[in-house]
Each structure stands twice: as C-alpha cells, then as structure tokens.
Length: 182
View 1 (tube, rainbow, N blue to C red):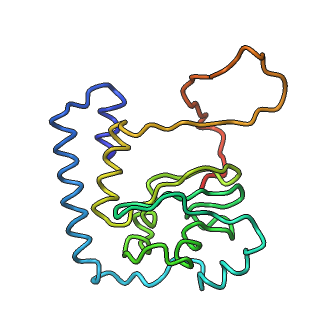
View 2 (view 1 turned 135 degrees about the horizontal axis):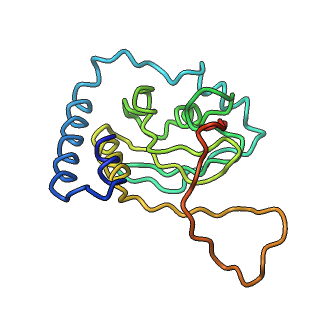
View 3 (view 1 turned 60 degrees about the vertical axis):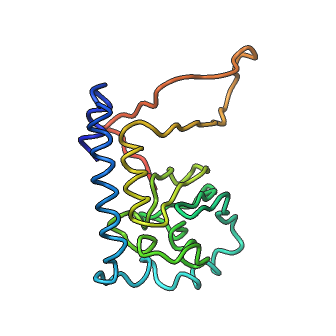
C-alpha cells in the first residue's frame, strides 16, 4: 500500500500497476476471510464492549448512516476515538456492542478493526469500515491510489468575508507538532 501511495503521490501510478496491486490486495483479503479461524482474536480491546457502551449511553453516540454487504458508514461524534485506545469512548467498541456485523476483521486490531480511515478525537464525521478482509484491502488500495474523494466542512471562529463560498486547499501538517489522532 505504501508503494501505491508513493507512486500516486509522485504522479507515477500506472493503471497496470494499480490494477495489479488491487488484485494482490483482494487475493490477500480472500485468504484472510477464509482462514480467520486460525487467529485468536476474541474481542475488541477495552473489556466488555456492551458494558462500556451502556456506560456512555448518556453521551452522544455514533450512528449508522449506511450499510452494505461490503461496508458500513458510521457517523463519529466529537470526543470519540475510532480505535486507538487513547480514550474511553471507542467507535470499535461501540460497533462490537451493537453487533454491527459478524466478521473477523471487526475484531482484528492489526487491520484497525476494518476501519479504512480515522478522524481526530475532537472532530465529528463519517467513518468507513469494511465488513471483510477482501473489502478492506480493496478499499485500502483505492485510498492509497488517490481514488477516494473526501470533503471537509469546518467551523471557523472569527470573521470570514461574505463573498467566500468555498476553500480549496491541501491539508498541511507539521511533523514537529503532535495531535491527538484517532
């Protein structure tokens, strides 16, 4: 995936290489989908998921927005983390408690419990999660190849010119500043 991303970033990702990477990723996913019982994944880290879910029932909770045979889309509220175990409110634990899908990837930390991407804890937004390893690797190749389009809406403090309707800018980050991601 890193090579696909690097080639795409450099503007050198050929269609042939992208398709080959996609085929390899899907083949890897199919192998994991049929052989998952060899893994000793028993639960999402964080203890009893249902108990944790009930503990946070007074807080705004994640919500299902869309589900298909391949993926689910969840609206993550502010203050919740996707799956990195840095806060008590984990979307992965909530999904496990809600029995969103019965799939080994939803319990596999090494593949981020099937989540395709994350959002910082203070932010809210849509999170995409795969229901199988095959779908996960397929979507990861698409993400690395720059085939996934993301739109962001921001709340800004201060005055903005009334004529400003849209901001089109690349996201920039500084390596010397750490943020609370999740």
